[in-house]
Length: 140
Image 1: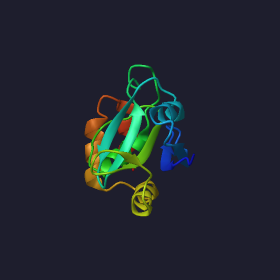
Image 2 (image 1 turned 180 degrees about the vertical axis):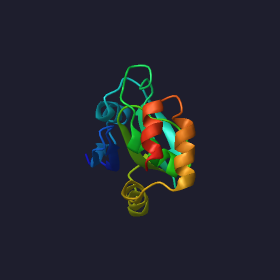
Image 3 (image 1 turned 90 degrees about the vertical axis):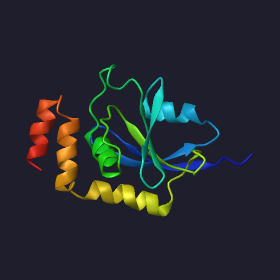
């Protein structure tokens, strides 16, 4: 039996960003284990990129994931993410697949650059309920 791996990027709230190969045969169980959650949600981003995130991250005390939140904002979804996130590719039918080379490069580029002023403004608005983070963002 051949196992297909799903090339992904694991984004830890402590800003540790690593490449991860998920086992497609294990599906959701592998994703839930990788982000250490009971239930996960999918955040749709541009370029057929999805983020798997802890669905209960806000209510279970998970740490704000600023790198994943910035990525989501840069790729068209102004949401706030708590806990570990995993970026994967998706087909037009919604099937989870490994990140293509161009998707992987887009994710890497997002982490390598400072957010533009418009993105920072949107981040500040999204994070307004977290005053310490907003103060930090204003210094970017």
